Length: 252
Ligand code: NAD
Image (cartoon, protein in one colour):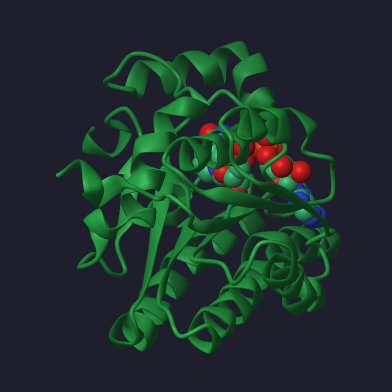
């Protein structure tokens, strides 16, 4: 049974692995055996130290994913440095907050480019590399509670995360028979940079906590198990699912 979760020697390409959820996912995958290629715009120094301390290889790929055109070169850098990816985690993401009546085109495009457009073209490039290497693979998109719910004052974020849920299902339909599993993790409310504004707002913070059956914000390390599951052969027959890791939020 333990072999089902073994990722020894697999190559995982993780975006936005320098901090928050991406860092925890990269570290969990490394603990399960993966070498890690970390793509992002900030140096992933802490993640690199943690992954190397586990005895795994680590590659930094500098890329500002607000430019979706970079996707092929990001995947090629992974292929050149560590080999074709076995696992892609589309984690990099941003959020912009404003009333829908005031929401700007810049706040729309910035979020959609990183959260949705880059994620799609990275999945496309990674799938091509997996197939060219004669293997299947695992693609894990990071969705959100706003893949299921509307949210408020985050129009482009909700559109991007609802879009990522749809795309996860579409890609699963097209690639399941090719041996590529495409799934998503939908984190609930986690204590990271992404939710700092909410946690600093006493009213909103109380409201949110009051609705979480687990009674606490998520810790980034709470996502590790779901990531290893969806990256491993334990999930070989799991396709197109959006797996909430939310302390029970959606059950309320
Ligand atoms: P975070 O702000 O700590 O991490 C975001 C990551 O994305 C960082 O590594 C950042 O460098 C990277 N990134 C942002 N813009 C980029 C760009 N242009 N190019 C390359 N990398 C870029 O926040 P987080 O909470 O760890 O967010 C990670 C993912 O989880 C995001 O997709 C976010 O939407 C999602 N998420 C977070 C929560 C939460 O409660 N924290 C809930 C649901 C979903």
